[in-house]
Amino acid sequence: MSKSPKLLDDLSGKNFLVAGAAGFVPSYVCENYLKKGARVVGLDNFITGSKSNVEILNNYENFDFHEVNIYESLPDFGDIKFDYILSLASPASPIDFKIIPLEIMRVNSEGTLNLLELAKEHNSVFLEASTSEVYGDPEVHPQVESYVGHVNPIGPRSCYDESKRFAEAMTMSFKNKYNVDTRIIRIFNTYGPRMRPNDGRVIPNFINQALRGDDITIYGDGSQTRSFSFVTDLVNAMEHVLMLGDHMPYNIGNPDEYSIKEAAEIIVKSIGSDSKLTYCDLPKDDPKRRRPVIDRVASLGYGPVVTFEEGLRETAEFFKNFRS
Ligand code: UDP
Image (tube, rainbow, N blue to C red; front, top):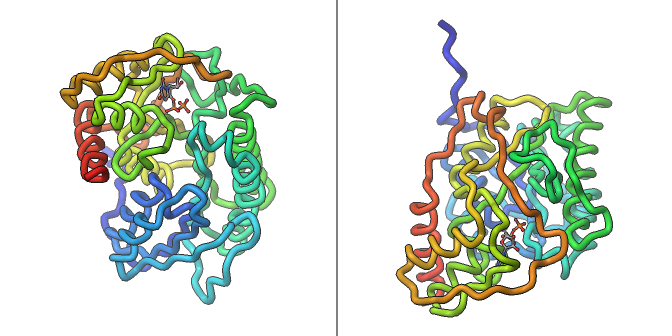
């Protein structure tokens, strides 16, 4: 009987370039490979990333960092040849879409192009961190990778949705034209420690409101759904795709689906808060339902292990310490 391939525990001798290294998810991605002995070079312009994440990564001697705008140019890396290039640099919170839409569009277009050119030159495996947002407000539920989406090209989320769709198209073009060894992952809602307290996304908002005893701000009637993945599960899924996957897109997430009202109630209860739920306007184009079909990544040996309750406990602990 053939054994299914496994992830390697030792990646010493391997070189990783991680764009967006100061961000919430990328900081965990860098740490994962640093712990396995790889050399990791991180890039970030700190537009939404945080210096404290880079301080954590600087504790590893095999980590180097360049402060740079990857859509302008990449630094001189000297003799290093990258085995893996990870395109993780985009801001991803709906509040960012309002404030820095052009930076988001540039990083996902010109920035991704610069990284793909480098991957071609270095013969690297290239991974584009795309998003469930490429499905827009989906008419197909749950979302399977073959669904081509329902995106409003001129709506308030379009700077992110459309530039990630463009990044996917460019990644496929480098695969088709130059045979670059590419991967595309579509990341569904992810949460965990190291998110910005003012990130604006639902889990940090609700946890911080519950910790303060403030009203929990539900947008709309709270019947819209999301499927939340804890960050360490995401990192593990990403590694499965990077090491064992092919060039077609993979949904990455946890298929446990909650309405936003349910999520609010679970958070209030788990924190033991006396916060009340309050209802505000639903933002335009807010997707009504979101749940990934993860059969493709599961076929590589991946499965989520962190429950919503466990993940929330850990995240709440982080925000408690952050506040004190
Ligand atoms: N949301 C909410 N209250 C908040 C923040 C977000 O009800 O304080 C809702 C938002 O309208 C959306 C869902 O929670 O339906 C997830 O929002 P988030 O910004 O986390 O990410 P999205 O999945 O929309 O990109």
